[in-house]
Image 1: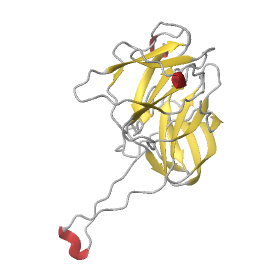
Image 2 (image 1 turned 180 degrees about the horizontal axis):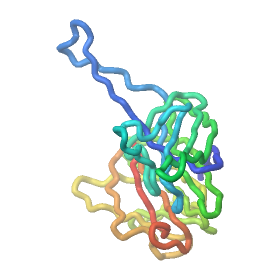
Image 3 (image 1 turned 180 degrees about the vertical axis):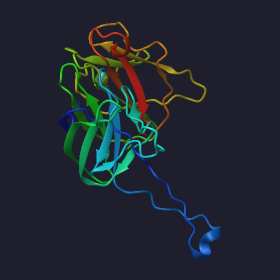
Image 4 (image 1 turned 90 degrees about the horizontal axis):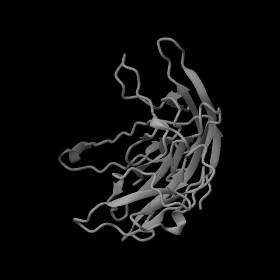
Length: 260
């Protein structure tokens, strides 16, 4: 079981802007010129606070989320159960990033700071930041982990499991169909498993059901339509979220996203 890198008190969520560039130089204007990708640390933000509001984020005193919004529209916020970017990662300058998370201003209230802190991030490394906890219980925090998304076997796909159920007293198990790998079992609150190698699906295969259960039980918690067709060299994260005893948006369920 991999332990998290750090927990920052407060609610941490974000969106980001990624830019691509194509160029023509002098006499090479009729040729394809390959531009070196942006360098830096790669970061993905996940909002897993079931009763938390949408948030915006500033990095090094500059607006980081919603920068593509055309004024006077209000910049989009990162809301519960969402990840940004949806695919791949956002790029930040390596070093110590000053992160400020705010509830955006409304017509009746000014912008409200939620957290301000420094997060060390390294070039060419990948990180996931999960906002976890509960607004009602005033125990919001951010779970930060480095993601190892280099395949040790390029013929395999990879999957991991994260528990963000704030009031869970026990662990949860992740299964693929009827297979419940030991490395994905009994994952407790704020724990993140390592990525586990799984067989990719052959062409034309039926999607595999993703099953989440409380440890030691046989009752499935994930929706019956929650499925996956694993692709080799892809990395997937499933996080269980909500509250024990929660209803509606706060009911326990699971979400899957692709890391790479």
